[in-house]
Length: 184
Image 1 (cartoon, rainbow, N blue to C red):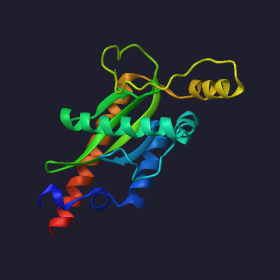
Image 2: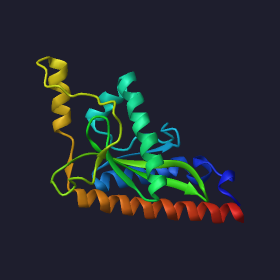
Image 3: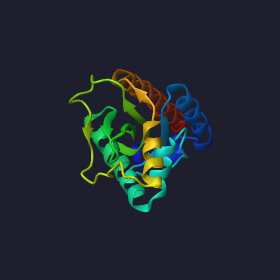
């Protein structure tokens, strides 16, 4: 059976996957969401940071988030591995592609972290040119947003890579199990 017979909802039991996603997010200290190939969420966010909640409330920056998710998923498929990048706000995110056969269905996105070390120099690229600037303006709103940004968890690059490898293994397992069930 080819990948054309599947979509994310036939691969993932969304309520069960959201429960797994919640546990993984809490355990890894990252935010996790699953998106379709267009970058549109198919699950709710697990452990989203306050900063990203504010950014996703704004219609302009929310479109940038969706665009980052979509482009990162495509890049992960092109590379045939998880893709770690900087989003439009300069925060580290990663895309773990969900692929059935030769068909890209979407990605499990995780991150919303800042790097705590310099070991990623040259390894993490900025994905989009439309940058959402975070100015240190002297307005109450800008200060509140910067405080939320400063509370984004920090993580070593090597830990981000480990989480990406773990999520990739989980996604491959889920895809294989779904394909086996579907073929029976």
